[in-house]
Image (cartoon, rainbow, N blue to C red; front, top):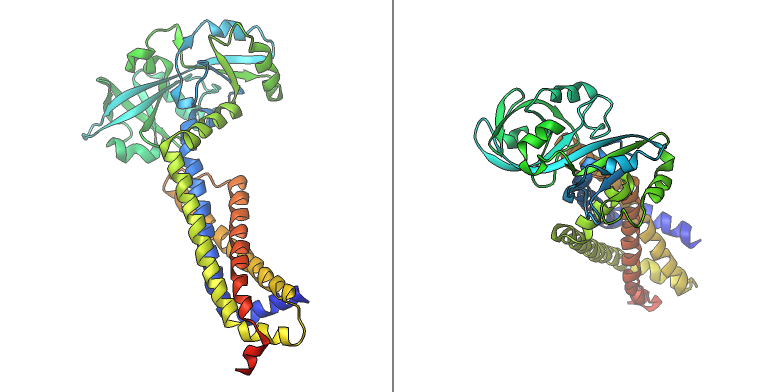
Length: 377
C-alpha cells in the first residue's frame, strides 16, 4: 500500500517533486561527466598501449606509466623469441621534442616511433595501413587531426622538431594527448629527431604479438624470471594501461584534484536534493497528518518518503544519463578525451541513487511535523 501511495502521490504532485528530480539529474550529469573526463584525461597517457594491438609489452622494470618508459637493451628481443607462442616482436620508441610550426608557434611534443610496415602492431588502431605507409619516406610524421591548429601546421607543410626539418604527411585519430602533442614517425625518423633514441641497441618498448592472445598471461609468467627482472619487465596490454591510469589518477595532482571536485559535486547534489525533498515533504504535511489520523503507522509514512526518494533518484538518473550521452557526443565531435564506458556509468548511477536515498532519509525529519493535531489548527 505504501509503495503504491508513494507512486500515486508522486504522479499527482509532480510539480512539487520536479525540482528534486532536476537536481538529481544535474548532479548525475556532473558526476558522470567529471568521471568520464577524469578517466579520459588520465587514460590519454596510455594511448600508445590502448591504440596498439600488442598482446605483451616489454619495458624498463618498475615503469609507472606507459608515457614514462625508459630504454632497455635491444638484445631482449632474442630472449623473447625463444617462446614459440610469440608470433612477432617489434620495437616502439618514445622520445621528446620541441616543435616549431611553419606559421610560428612552439610546443613540446612526444615522439612515438613505430614500425611502418602495414601489419605492424604499434598504434594499429589509430594509424591504418594506408596512412602508415606514408611514414616510409624519411623525415615524415603524422599528427592527430585535432592538433593541427595547436601546431600551426597543415598537411603537406614543413616544420621543425629539435632543429630537424620534417613534413606532415597525414593525420590520425584517437591520439590526442592530455598536455602536449603526440607526433608519430617511423623508427628511423624518430631516432634522427631525438638524439637520446639514436643508439640502435636501445628501445623504449618491445611489442609482442602472440599466436593466441589468451596465452598472454602464461607467456608473461614463463618469461618473467628472477634473473631477467632487473633488465626488463613484461606486462599484458591491459596491465600496462591500467597501471598508467592508476598512476595518473592516484599519484598525480591532477587526478587527485578531479577526485576532490567529484566528491564536492556529490556533496552539493546531496544537500540540494535533500532540501528540495524536505520542502516537498513539508508541503505534504497535512496529507501525512491525515494518514496518521486514520491509523497509518509512522514507519509506513517513512517508507513512503523513502520510496518517493527512490523514484526521484531513478527518474533523475535517467535524465542524467541522457545528458551525459549528449555530452559524450559533443566531446567526440570536439576531440575531447571522454571515457564514458559501462563501468563509469554504473558507478556514477549507483552514487546518484545513493544521493537520492540519502536525501530522502534526511527529509524524514519533516515527518515529525505530521501530527494529526495539526489538522485542528
